[in-house]
Image 1 (cartoon, helix red, strand yellow):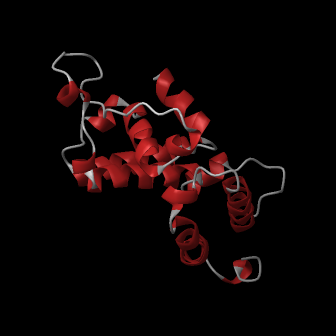
Image 2: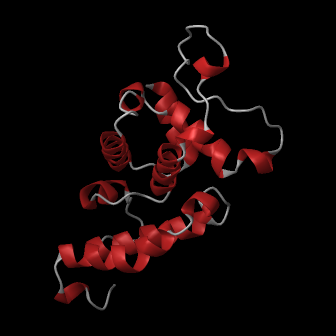
Amino acid sequence: MRSVKPFVSMKMLKLIYYAYFHSIISYGIIFWGHSALSIKVFWLQKRIIKTMMGSRNRDSCRKLFKSLEILSLPSPYIFFLLRFVIKNMDLFTTNNEIHNLGTRQQHNLHHPSANLKKYQNRVFYMSIIVYNILPAYIKKEFTNPTKFISLVKKFLCESSFYSMDEFYNFCTMK
């Protein structure tokens, strides 16, 4: 990236980023995005973003992710989990299908009880958790998949999450 930066525009740098880095990290991210080694990939992503923008090593990347409209590593993980929910809606049951009580969480997805951490880190379970914690204005558009996906992408791009815990805390506070 450093070798071509002086000769190309920012638009071309973003194209290079998406072609060489984003395509690799997106491949199978719903399977490895919650692993401990994803921190190293995120560190590499931040380093590439800083190189693209000409920032110093100690500068924060939050504003850089927002200005470039690039999702930080936890955000594509969340995004692809939610796409998994939309594409496989027949695998999931809502709370109002389980019981007929009109509760606040009746439109949330029902997650089975699981004690094993290995099961809780799997795609099916994590996608339920991520969907249920989304803000209500996004979940309301679930019947329209294209609008739902665009709202999720906009939400993730504006928020620039650095971890799944940050996503959980942000969504529970709203």
